[in-house]
Image (cartoon, rainbow, N blue to C red; front, side, top):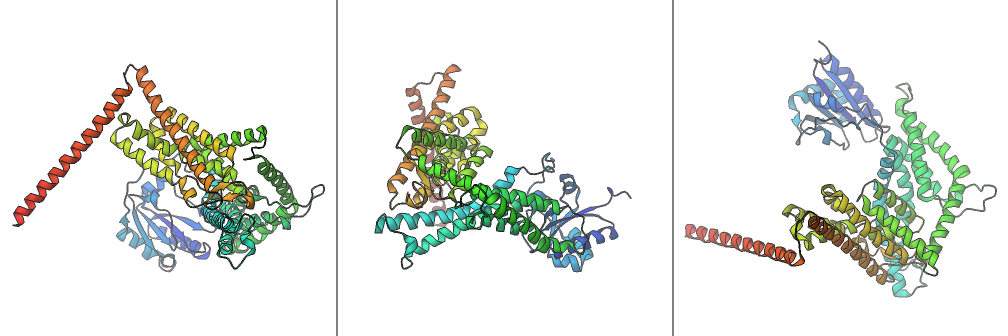
Length: 545
């Protein structure tokens, strides 16, 4: 009997530490499968990442998928397949029983299996995906820290005066809010580096990347290089990205080493953290820390002296230009790669207390979904019921800073939608840039303003929240509204022009009549529905009597 004629059993093993039990269970299942007459392949989810991963063809052919796991794993690729789950210890103690039970007792997972093979599934993840993995862990920490910082700084200065320092008064409640924000901002950069490395090489890369990224954010640990004065600026997100990528790919390379089985459990616990952590810590402190910190210091000083500073035309042009660029990138692909590049740069600067680039980003983020929602309300005759519902949904998504709500419109009408979104978002971003709108939280939309994270300026001297920065928060709301209205009307009138080019006669009078007629029809339908419901109630009451 050829191997392809045998039943194929797939298994995933994973334990909380990702070391001994994961690989011991894999070994036991691998040895037992052929003895029972089955082909078996085991995918390990260990501290060194995912190894021996399944192909789409193998999943399609498999009789059952065994999940011998004590942690959560993604099972969406097994939709429509028979799945059996047990503790990892059971697979070690009784692998034969587990395989037999899986074949007999496995249950079909809900959903439909996708038999189409993804051509990119076996290819390496791009660097951008690893960066976004790190950002996804960092953003909640930025939001937590940014909002508490804004509340502590904004409200305390509004109550006690602009010279009040909440960090020097531990008898005041604002002192403790400030400490929450500071703790979050201390953690955000190491978390970014750690989870970039984790995305590349798994859990074994987290510890060294976390420590090295933390050192990069501690300029007092840098060795002074000749010709460079003492550096007081941390490497920030640039250092974290460099550490995360370098350590991630180094650990991934180490994971390919052919080490004896007896030493394999030791690698992710001792060898990788100690050796990789030591080597890259030395590089950060003695080689690149001072260099990157010096560059970041110059950049930070330039941003603070120009962005939002309306003393001269040059500074106004810089704020306007960068704001337009960030806004256009935010609106171009609504959460896609271009948007994410701008988002990464803006959120990364928050750790260095540079908040104005994120202010432009936050103002531009909601423009596309808000604009699409407004367009479906104002130009209603151009949309079917499904599109109107999507528009309302997009509007509310925009209110909470989720730009992806506009994507369905861009898919159906890419040229007009993308162009309209870019123009509206660029204008909103440009207005925010020239006025120095700031955002202390790594998120956008009206929601961050309501929570007190918007304001003006950079560093501790800025005006933030509903205390000192209330007028700047309202101004940011105005810029969001302006951008959204420009997007909505540009898209709507573009459709009017294109319809006229096709020979359709659309006057404003016809447009108003269409909208009014549509409302009349909707009102009639609602009344008819109410009459039917009332009639049913009357019939039910008569039957009961």
